[in-house]
Length: 386
Image 1 (cartoon, rainbow, N blue to C red):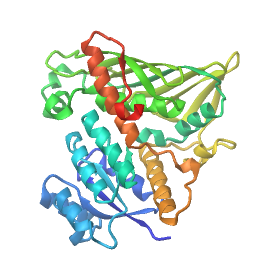
Image 2 (image 1 turned 180 degrees about the horizontal axis):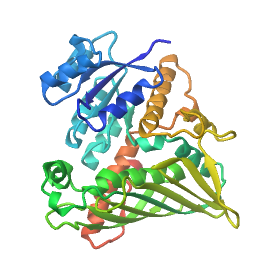
Image 3 (image 1 turned 90 degrees about the horizontal axis):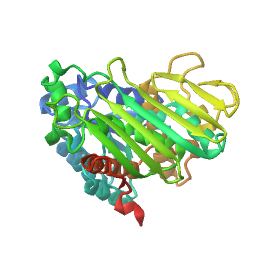
Image 4 (image 1 turned 90 degrees about the vertical axis):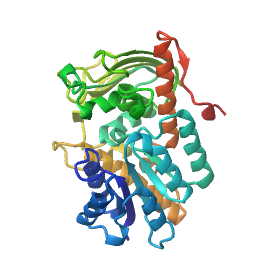
């Protein structure tokens, strides 16, 4: 089977996220990196794309040049990944979707609810995919967690607790370091810093595993380092569409935490917990029973877990493998569309534009709530109330 052509915007040499995307996209032999505009410096971007094996005529200086160059090619890219600074996501994604390309956009998909609404409308009009890289939803046991909850193993879900807290911005002496300072600059981050950066991962995870959406929320934001205009710590309480109560904590000043993405779900029949730093184990405790350790890769897991397991039991699973599952989902969906057949349900799990819109609505709802001393506010975007 011929590989799909893949293009990347951003994610150049020295990028934090670029290598994870390239490893993930290449793992299954589904995609070939055929085009790229990888750097804000046109010459550097062209040179690095060619280092990665992209032909010279498809190593572009910027996204506009790439759009013009790919638009009318018979072998044009099947999927474009947008891995540029946050404020550029909307414009690039919008233009490629309107030109008929499928897009995988890094989070946040947009900076405003209005932009997110427009992206969803474009997807509905064109039929093109806009996936959003909530890549942690690609972990095998996260998908098994979702499957267990969906089939009723926990019964009615009462409470979900999600965290994404680290301590990498805790040193006040580093607050003016340009590599840190931009994250708390409203001109570059928009209305929120820590919640928009990490908190939306935790909130998306809560929705992904429970199958419920956030409807209302109450937020408390804090700038624990006084020079920061935007928050470096946030606590959010929320209520979900199926009646589940949610608690979320996200922080950049949690000294001793390295990554800190965890999810716990408590239902009438039992509880589940999973931590991204120990992704091979999912802990299940039946009500009035003993803790059971579910190992990634063992027999008799769900189809969702089986399909997304990459290495044999006992070996470590990592972030690029989770990204690979997102790319695998996208490849399966694109191929199903091309063949005119239904996609495998176990592959139909990638986050979509509506997830990106819900996240941006949550960001702005949290900002409004925090400014109103934690007042409960509506978190459902207007477009999705129809």
